[in-house]
Image (cartoon, rainbow, N blue to C red; front, side, top):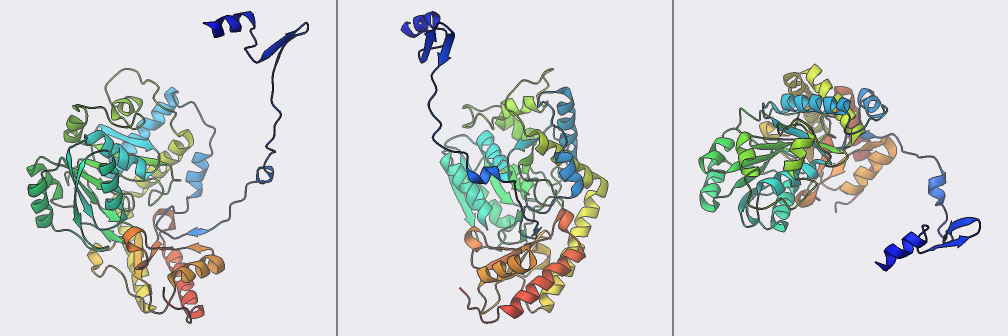
Length: 418
């Protein structure tokens, strides 16, 4: 009440002083100077991004992202979002109405799926054969789920019989499986898993961040309930958007919760309206979507549609097989022995005997401006990862990667393995 009286009597506020010339607001002296780095132009080097992602972005997608922005609630923006939805439905091979793109990386979609489907105390089963299963298990545990795991070392995969046995034992509401395990270079079989999950009244959640567009995946035909991916891999958009889709079965679970999702930002009750998926005549403000990111994502989905999914899968396989042969000709060992289980977009190589993998990567970056990567999570120290996906997926780039590896192996022969 006192503050209200002060502001009425002194419209400049409690820190203002009145003079005959008017009201002057008090101002502290600026003590932090402008940082020198911000007074220089932005510099970002060109590099060949042949790691597990992000990959180099084609000029057409860069140009789309550089177009003048429009308001996130403009009708034209809603039209672009509708295009994105249709592009995702094609990429995922789904007719699901509840299809959209998250405002964030693949982790955002991962959390969106868990936060909306699972309630505290419910049982979740997670297949762990690399880092992404580990992440999902941790997120589910943090939100109060009862987490059960199926665990294999990086490069291992699970049979449908093993999955069914765990489903029967733990009776989870959700089973998580990584289709493209980029930390190991493995593409996991999905056929029959959805049917098995539904037999036990369980939903199937699949991560396809590293595999979408590079390896066959059919959401509706394979009975996947929730599927998500990222923009920055074979889709070749900048990082920061993440397509996701929910089946009708998943929507029934999601929209009949007893408790609200732990995240307001990722609450599908609001996001379904923002994306025009809830049947309501008007979309209301929820958050400010990444307008430029959506421009770029739309263009990347348009390129995939023009190319054709089957052509994209075939092209990634052909380039991968060319690259695998070149690696074997150099005397290197592929980490995934079974050719049918190798991820076409991210190839993994066993660290060659007698070499320090960190020095190999540093040499290739310094002398060839090429990014490769080491292992991630449980695969650290076990392998090297080389990604040739989307715009980067061609035999010329594969040959460049092979030449860089050959040079590094010759120059670093005296390194000791760590």
